[in-house]
Image (cartoon, rainbow over all chains, first blue to last red; front, side):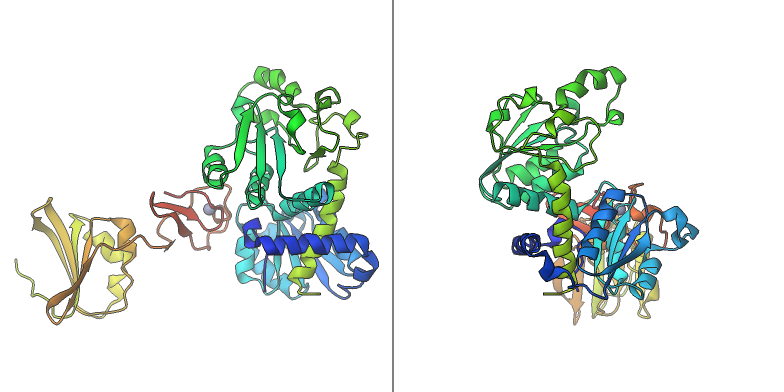
Length: 304
Length: 138
Ligand SMILES: [Zn+2]
């Protein structure tokens, strides 16, 4: 039995296989409509994350399965202090697979050590969120038709933004990837990502605080939020936040086939005027998330 | 002071003076039925004073933890009255309940029953990380 706790749990071959199954589901949805008939997915969400939960539930439903679970810890037995292990042992008797979201880092791993059914980490604090990374990879594959030979701009909070860290780690498996790291000085990428991931894998990267400087070179622009609470003072925040808001003007020199991504929810880091641009892929990205989760559920349930 | 030399067993030598009781506890030597001698404040050519622990039997006791506790410690394995093997224990791959994860965002911060498991991720720099949250613990 296999779990998905960390994207590193999957080999490159397994990731490629998930992507190809997801693409097959997109082209032949009927073929998959009853694959999970009489199977149940339990969504154990110890903190609310409506977007992720709906994506998992829609995925299971489109496979013909059912869903049960809770969407925040206060309304369930876990609020009485039951351990993650105990909850999972009980739920193992009701469901066939679990998607778990938890505010504490490592909770899904703890769950997987005692579970009799597969566990999917649906986000553990700011630690891991492997299905987001799989979503990003499927989006890139579908929009660019390749995972090699790409120049990827990542913009925003690169210091605390773990989505970005996971994406960099995941893309470092592929050939001829270049990164343009765009952030204010205060939110630069941590040293260990540069040393242990980028430099170790001989990946070219440039750091800049100007979103427009390398715009014309990018194949992908991955936007993230610049959170106010990350700044020491309000003035700094106000001074910097607008420079990282993507609008039509900043896209002037961008490639025709640029792919603009964002893990969502967005606050204001992408101006709504960009939504109608054909290069905006972030809503499609959310849809791809459902398909990759379908492929993942099939894989973990060992359904062909 | 004289302690009989042992025929078969282990001599854990060059323990920092005063640390032998801690080592005794970490190794759970209290649970052994065999003879164990603790020698405190023995004379040492290198450092003035040292502690020594002698275990009078070859057991399958795991001494790897010593590599983490104090890399100066040497282990002498004695077979038929002779030193068969003398070594510095290597850093163990895994430490259970030796170091606690202090990350307040870690699941161990709210579930007291969980064992604190740390894994060696960088032998060169002696870095251990929490198995659950992957934060550095030392
Ligand atoms: Zn931890």
